Length: 228
Length: 218
Image (cartoon, rainbow over all chains, first blue to last red; front, top):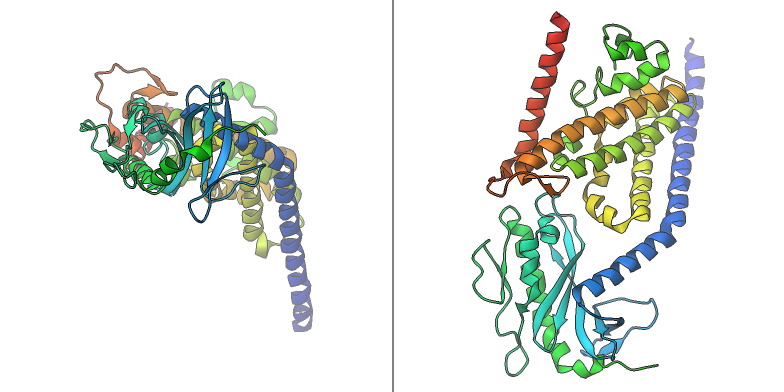
């Protein structure tokens, strides 16, 4: 091959490379977009269904629910339709439209990534009485025990989160202790082998209850069921 | 890899299955060129996701799907992709199918997605898939590439399952989340931790190579 031919061959070759890369790029982008569009509706339905299931799971014995959010000046407002954003609180009611409990969304850093949970709050007894992990990337087989281990989940049948007399602060902060060392109703019995994940759950519930429960407890009337 | 070497040295039921070259492409991934036990490829997901039997199985199936789809696309585009940009193209194709798999799993079930979400993205870094694209699909017809991907996928899933089953039984006392060892059994937590993955893999490789050596001398 002469030098002149070589120089001519080079741009033709890079044109081919460009064609291949751009072509494959467009093809791949198209495939992803098509899959995304095709699956979007069902995935959103699945998510909504899972959320609904989780709410009915953390507040036992309810027949309907409403969604609320906390506004800028600690005002509790009902959320209508699908436009949910910010701190969400789901109120569960029995057949007589009596408030049974609240399901509160909370999130915090776990071992691998952010853990999102939903916990049920009983305003009458002032306890956490339900718990559900919504999203976690904790190590399979170890950290994911926070959603499977029945002994750990038993912590959330009646976890004490009672407020002090002024209803401004918790009597006792929620804290995770070592496995088998739980003595008080506000302690969470941890998991050996998932120390960080179980401690993270304690921290998430503590910061969420510290921040939200005084606001919620002083505005319980906002959750009264009203017929439209 | 050594696609020609398949032609020789098989015995027993494998020999009866032989005959057409297409079954060879499938069979070789199961045993002779098993991606984990012989080629020792894709160790990152093998060690990371084999701590329970169900995780191992799910990871194996997801990897098989990605490998199958990327092999089909790489094989059909093999005359179009210039040599210089082939690796970049393959990675683009593999990453696309991993993303699609992620959506598909969320489409099937949120529960399943929740369980697998942490390690679906790990499939991208599985060098087994890239090696099949580079060593096989880019040089063979679509039909052969499909068989190759299926064989390698089944072999990979089988190997992952071997590791996952041992690690789950010893490390957690369960098999597919069902307790099978008595309650008095003290779980070997190390088996679920990364170190246990290395131990188990080493023991399986030992068994596999001993069996192969015995067959060679026989």
